[in-house]
Image (cartoon, rainbow, N blue to C red):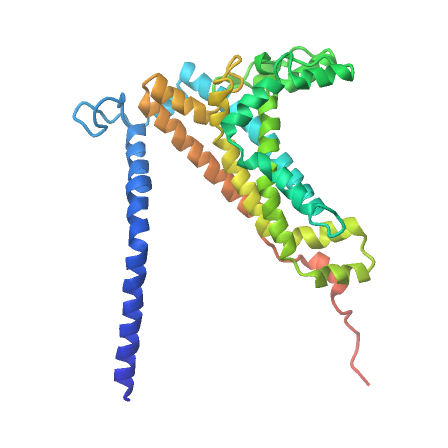
Length: 364
């Protein structure tokens, strides 16, 4: 067989494979285009328009307003900016506490239930994972009952001599309460006199409200089990040769975990942190079912504010603008996490002890 004929047949086979690939993926591409890409592009147009939710967003009565919806949120100086700043502050504290705590707790649970000497490992894995598959609405209703003023949590605190707060009706910030216990009721003028997004720096540093703290505990309780399974799968795929070598070198348990096991979990750690970050910035159903932003808007989040602006106030352009600002925030934090957890080469300073010592002079 000649070379041109062989090349022609090979090209024909590859062309057939390409056509088959597009044929099998076409239904999913069409579905993604119809139900994801097109709606996102429509929402992007709405964020630059004054659409009020009536009729088509591409109708003749809808006008292009440019960046007016965005400027009202980040520099308008009115109630819209203040509400958006409040929502960002609440959600920022939520992310700052939920993501690290749930990541560390899920890793700890994974290490514990992955130990061969633990009896009933299947039971503990199921028990820790069960809250993750329970309806978030059901968990929120249960949380409202447990953290009510006369609920089980406050009764347990009273048993040990602590007077529990009225959780979901207390708008005070946790850090402000802590400072008030030491006699600090107001902040310095540099913090109280300067604002960002309509909120003073002193209010930005108030910490999560007591009501939001209950939601933070609920998020950690319901999500740690899911991420625990990811860490278990990663731990079971690790090679034991490196750990055995570290044991032979005299490394103790903490040194083996910190220097050997944890670096090998970096891809899974990035996945857990990214999923946790996305979920924490998009918290909505717990707020909608529980407090609807109260008390005093201290549980208001950007996702719920976007819903409220669009469906309640009929400010669809503003609601879409909030959603896209939130999208940009998530992308920026994800890229930052990827840069932070990226593998880097070993520096020359750390490699110096392992390099051969150069000898002076030639060999005789």
